[in-house]
Image 1 (cartoon, rainbow, N blue to C red):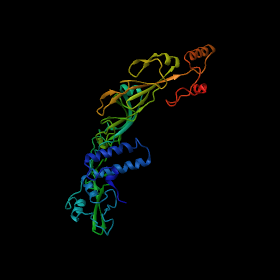
Image 2: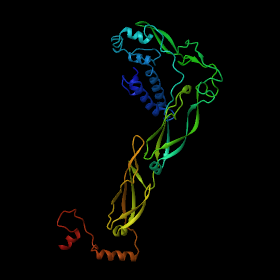
Image 3: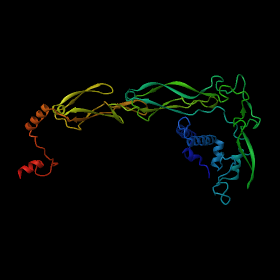
Image 4: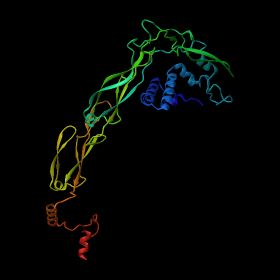
Length: 386
């Protein structure tokens, strides 16, 4: 089955190199072995990396557009006709195909690839309290990534030694093979297995990094997390990710926020919610309650006759609104939900006092509410009138 190069990266056939790079980085962040240990994800990560390497090379991309599969060891073509009966050139002339395979009239190939490659992005999670999400925090984070080898400074060579040209490919970085097909002899090229496409080998590799130019090490990074972040948000630390092979430029490090539950407040976007429990006497008479928010202490006033499930809104006492630029633009609100507590146990004196209050208010007999319909009065009052 034909390999879908562009579909695998999720881009169109006319994608720019920058769009290819963004799509690859997005997939690499999801599939990198340091983030996703699933074997299937690791296999897909290798496939995505290989496909990105092909499409980022102009000559290889030209082969893909002509119907070839550079990752197929057989160098097979994907004919537009689906087989010998269709157009084997997929709408391109023979000259186009010869140019694609032989570099334009039988000239040289694409040449060796650079040993210096950009590094991958890295992801780490940081637990933050609601107070830290509210005010922002500067956190020292310990992370293990690939760093520049200090012994060889990224060259991969021991001491004063240097890489030498590969004898297998003659420094071209690729080897050619000839296969017979209905066109005659077809020459295909693939990366040199001896030098892995670099065109040179390191005869005396660095003992510290084994010739890779980088080693894995644990280091401490200072991460400045702005106010208003929420659970699942990611803060980007530029050039703090994995150093690339050969001492290449480092990728980015993303700090993903994991917000811890709060014992008083619950969060709903920019708004906060909390519940206060007041005795029925305080709800009936009215009272003032000190309420400590995330930033200050507020005096909460309950009017006489406050009913259960009353909601009070304190404007601007919620979470900061974080803009995409990292700046704070206002704050949400704090919603206070009132829960009226009815005593479950009364002593004799308390019960007598409540009975006296009920008699004074004419509430000694219960009534069934009518929802505003009927002749007025409750069920018991209607029974007494009969």
